[in-house]
Amino acid sequence: MSINTLPLRYHKIAKITLLILIGFVSSCSNNSKKSPLDELWKYQDYIKDSEKITSQLDSLALSQRNLAIEKLKQNNTYIQIVDSLQTNPEYLVILNAINDGVRSSYVNQEGKEMFSIDESLLAKVERLPNADDKIEFIINVTLLTLPNKGGLTQPILSSLNRYQKRFNYYGLPQTFYNTKGEKKWSIDYPYDLSAIFNILDPNNKKAINALYEAKSKGISNWFTANDKKFINPRLATVEGYIKFLKSNHKRSDHLPDNYDSEFWENYDEEVNIRIIKMILFKDCKGLQKEFDIADKNSESQRIRTGSGNVQLMNFINSQMIKMDCF
Image (tube, rainbow, N blue to C red; front, side, top):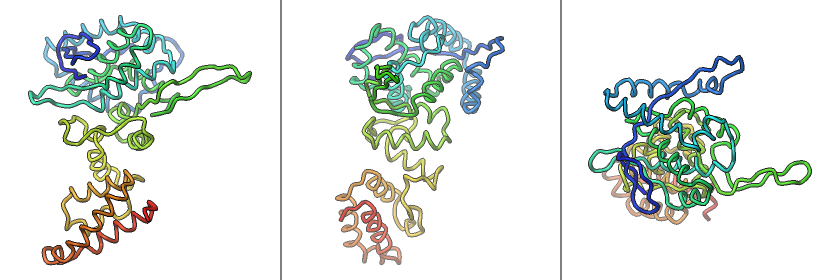
């Protein structure tokens, strides 16, 4: 299912296109109790960027945005999750679908920002009561995350933060019981919220690691690198994730030792990325093939660069030993 910027109408299988510009809403409570919005300090950079984008919208776009917010606030799912401050595990399937839309966001050939949501995830939402209302909420909130839509509102940020604090960045199905052995509540489906929190708090190492961990546990998957022009490649593809780590988190536990050694200067970045990807995927056969190719071409590499492939072969071999490939 693909989303564009045309008027909202959900169809089960057909592509969805819509034009919904959703704006910034913030309300301050006079109550002496601490407001949930007080916990949004960690997202201040995101909030400032959102405010800047909103301030640059023309009058028509801003009017459409404000009107759309009023409609969103009438959505029953919004009322339950955002206004009523509910933290119900049943809603994790909704947030999981939003996360899928966030990580799949892309620019099409006409330069329009779009996103897609896996049909199997929407099918789970359809099994919930008042499904159409929930799907409308999913689409509207995901649209907010697109770069030219102004960003998520602070009340929604607060709600997402509340769910993350209780349920972490991802999780598997589980059931909880009280001390009497009675079922208290359950999580019926795997869920992944890591892409959402990588755009809200891009320097959060726990969220960055969660992107990979959720994939390694089979909760979500990487997209194919050449599939689309993804808006946030690090959220979508393993190649984009590796490039992000190399540029911003060089000491990440998900990067192998010596991935940035000087000998790599003799190779295209594509080779480096490909081999690191094999290490992340624990692809012993692929690494063995890379080793054999390096061995075969070592002399020609020495003639071309003055250095053979011995260091590369040693690097691959050491990784294969760590992975227990032999």
